[in-house]
Length: 107
Image (cartoon, rainbow, N blue to C red):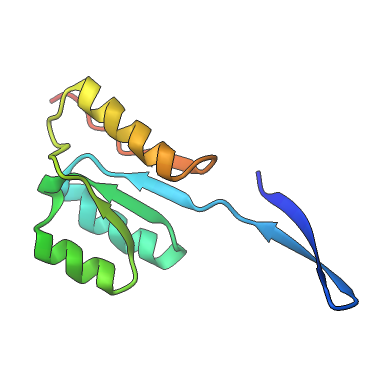
């Protein structure tokens, strides 16, 4: 739900709406590029594990304006506690925003 605020500019009152961004929490390297492409088009944030891309790829993609954060540890195949801790970090940096978590089936 968007928060509405009234701001006074000169003598005019303008209604501004804060729109929450979508945050994607990607667990598998194979999904990272696809999610990054979609997120870039809609202005969403993406969080990935260390194993999703190299440091150079992360730097290049982020320098192109993508809101991309890379953990210092891998997420692919991580245990539940590691994933929960990472998700808490994402939520800490994006309070009140929708976080979409990639589903990974146990194969």
